[in-house]
Amino acid sequence: MEAIWIQGGNQLAGNIAIYGAKNSALKLMAAALLTDQPCRLDNVPDIRDVRLMVQILEGMGVQVRREGESLLIEAKELGTEVPPEPVREMRAGIQVMGPVVARKGRIRIFQPGGCSLGPRPIDFHLRGLEAMGARVREEHGFIVVEAERLRGTDIYLDFPSVGATENLMMAAVLAEGTTVIHNAAREPEIGDAEKFLNQCGARVSGAGTGVIRVEGVTSLQGTSYQVMPDRIEAATFLIAAAAAGADLTLRPAPVVHLEAVLAKLSQIGVDWESPDPMTLRVRSQGALAEGYRPVHVRALPYPGFPTDVQPQITALLTLARGTSIVTDEVHAARFGYAGELRRMGAQIWVEGRTAVIKGCSHLTGARVTAPDLRGGAALIVAALAAEGESLIEGVVHLDRGYARLEERLRQVGARICRLEV
Ligand code: EPU
Image 1 (tube, rainbow, N blue to C red):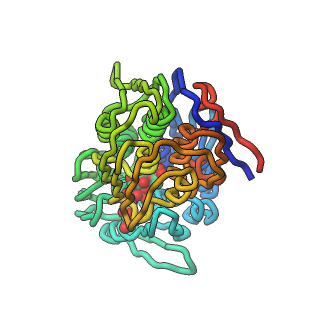
Image 2: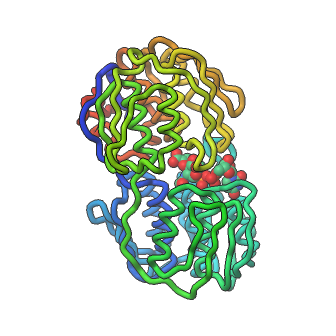
Image 3: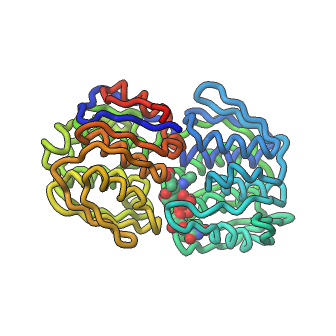
């Protein structure tokens, strides 16, 4: 089993290049199934979730080839049976549902399991497809969705779900007539999907607002598209720098997509600047020397504070001077890492969707386990700022979303490496 070893207390200095966004790349890979022509996606991070999505596509007969930072996808062949193993491991596998039903009239896919962020049903995805005329049934743990041709309609989401918005938007592209998705998610990655789809000949508008309109077309063509930079990865490095102490520059960092995070960091007292719209620089003496202020954080759908940065900022707040409150309104149970932070000396109590954090004067290195991807990132932040050595197990979770994490942190001065334990 692999683990990440960190000797805390080293200041970080230099530049980190931000990779393409996981949560956009995965959806664009699914969107490429809407056409039988080749698509080229540039700036696709080499992470485990992308590899799982490649397995899903290949399992359906699609040709996928990696060339450096790019993925070439050609869905001339497209089966309707989704291989169950990668879907069991990665919920984002269900994003192929909309495109495959739209193009092939059928899909059979394993019901994605609940995961450690709380119950994560897919009822909005299924209800939306049903509203478009699809028949949905469950058999032996699989979901079968069938429709001769989907029909455009008005869809109302109970919650602005990112995945449901994207799945239904992609399904609607090849539907007959116009689909309007109300209470749509407004995350920037949805704008990336809209641009990609329109470049392929789709007619989608409204991404970034709560109402998305899709006029169906009969076919799409292939295209070449550059995946947007990962705002969550940028936020993770930013917070790690604020905690450990640093003079660190991140680029390309989509400043406009990080406004809620940057506002909160300013409130905490983190010194950051943005010399241009794609660059962020953070200067810090480290949490202990800076005497950061406690704050209240509410993770909400975009443009609210991102739930995917909630664990990392909580780790930083364990070192603030006073009591902070962090609430997650998106995922029901995203504090699986709190007990691990406690092993490092953090004072943190969780009740339902809320954590209360009493800032302490220092953390001490410990042997801990990443419970999930961003929970693992929180432990990295804490370990970089802690006194002494930490060993973080559960590295497989970190590998889902961060490429070459240790190497990139080592290059800016962190004492970090991967070990067999
Ligand atoms: N929900 C339902 N029914 C549904 C769909 C969602 O009840 O049919 C609920 C979920 O249980 C959750 C809330 O709605 O409580 C929001 O879920 P959403 O559908 O927006 O999340 P997602 O599409 O499954 C994506 C990201 C997550 C990120 C969330 C919220 C990808 C691949 N994943 O998930 O990213 O937390 O949006 O922003 O895009 C991560 O990167 O670490 C990660 C978990």
